[in-house]
Length: 389
Image (tube, rainbow, N blue to C red; front, side):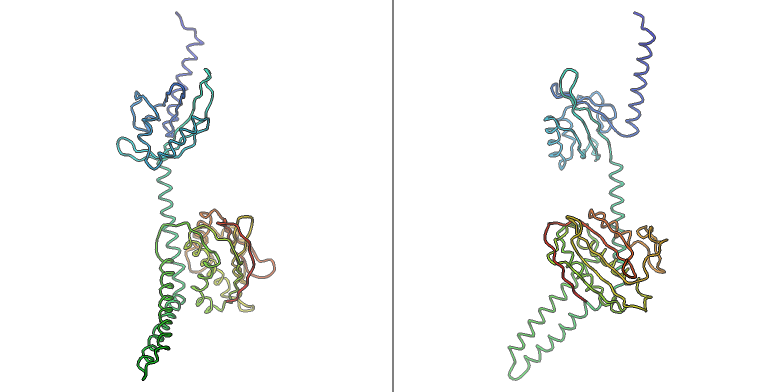
């Protein structure tokens, strides 16, 4: 039987389309599959077999695929299969361990359609995203290292405050211990006063321990940990830590913290790093101000629904128009000293907490206000309380 030219052309076009599709799948590391529920058949493309390091002649079953799925991802894999069988779509990031021991990150997507024979099937694709995941992990590690470096650079500016924070309870310890010895050496021994002094000694020892633990937490390198954070308390600790530096710069600090402020969920140390950076930036902005008080306001409040806002306002020279759009660019600074990464790192931290960081010129006076807003952990009423430090 002679094949008509139109039929030959159709076959040629079909083969060409198949070759193009196979090459496109290879380049994008994306394999395709068809899952026939009634027949229990899984049809894989050559690229998907290559991703799983399987011979294309292998008979593919869901049980076989499940043997390669990483144990930690297996429950999600099973739940996705059950959902697909019940009529749902497939959207599953998961890991596999191939026969050679290679760990791969995959992302499967699929859509349920009705077959021409009225049999439901899933048409889908699986992409090997291992390279992207490795790059993301490397980027996250580099970002964490840079964040730590920025924290150390910021804390290095607080040497006077740190020395004061540690020295104050230690001085009280020595004084109380000496008083206790005198009370015990008296004739007769003053046991009541010695007991009171000993209790003060214990109190100051605990205070010194808390100060050291707080400082150590700020300096240590650790993985970010999500926890409920009282933003008022976190900000107050930052102000205590930086009090000597602010006083030496003749900065008057005014805290206006909202009462009953809902907590936020995030990494306490990272959030304190952001607050500290904003406070020190506000101090630096007022170092040349001599014609007006160097007022620094730090406030907390409930912002948009479900959001908690913290703002730091200074009375400095403000933000020049040509600098406004580059404030959060990495390595951009208007200071003679500094790396220019503080605001960039702060923005990255706040974005990692699903929030935003922004700056605004003060409309009712000199200076600028930097604010960040992040989701609250729980909803609750807010009352205002003012405090001058």
